[in-house]
Amino acid sequence: MAETKLRVNAEKPSVGLVLRRIFSYFVLILLTVMCLFWFYLLFVNSTRSHAAISLGFSVLPGNRLLTNLKNALATEDIPILRGMLNSLIVAGGSAFLSVYFSALTAYAVHVYSFRLKKFAYYFILMIMMIPTQVSALGFLRMITKMHLMNSLIPLIVPTIAAPMTFFFLIQYMEGGLPLEVVEAARIDGSGEFATFNRIVLPIMKPACAVQAIFTFVANWNNYFIPNLLLSNKEVKTLPVMIYMLRSADFLKFDMAKVYMTITIAILPVIIVYLLLSKYIVRGVALGSVKG
Image (cartoon, rainbow, N blue to C red):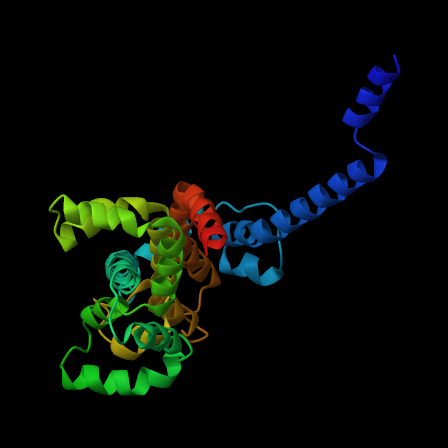
């Protein structure tokens, strides 16, 4: 009888534990509402007219969703669909090149032993401390001399050099890629590129997926460099076009069109996160534990 009572008391959570759980859930719910509120506000304003938005905040959506969408897509000077295609090309190409070549670099530094191995590792890490704005002027002059202005190539190819992606992937390799696997592949006659593509990349799939998502989103939202390089409306990316809408003169400025364009721009990012969120959580958790 006494043992049964002790077992029941041990299984029953204490009052303090219950209160901590309630407080934790309350904080998490509050943070979730605070994060999602701005997305809801964006959606609501994208369904209202410019005059209604000027009057202030509204909880209920309006009835101009299709009208605002039509107006946003019908702007001749700002081809939204073309900008979305350009952003998709830049973000997708950058994500692929950045992840693949960063993984290849991390593989070389992790697997091979050479004289300047530590120097190469720390040199790549030092590049992370250099802001993009510092090298922007030199980059702009180089692209001008190469006659690559108004081209998407300078927005895609330089992403091959991605120190942050390299650092994350090499940390993952140090804990998740035993050198014995590579040695076994070599003994079986596998070439270095075959070993990397067929054995190493599948092992690193969670980490590569995480970095691909982050790189895609970062380049999708990138405004600074595209604004410097692109002046032709046919090659402008979506963030540049949104800024053009915001900087319109007072008579042409339409907040409803701006909100609708931002909604169109953010939808692909939301879809990517919803579809691949499991890879984000899994990859970050594994990377932090193994690193």
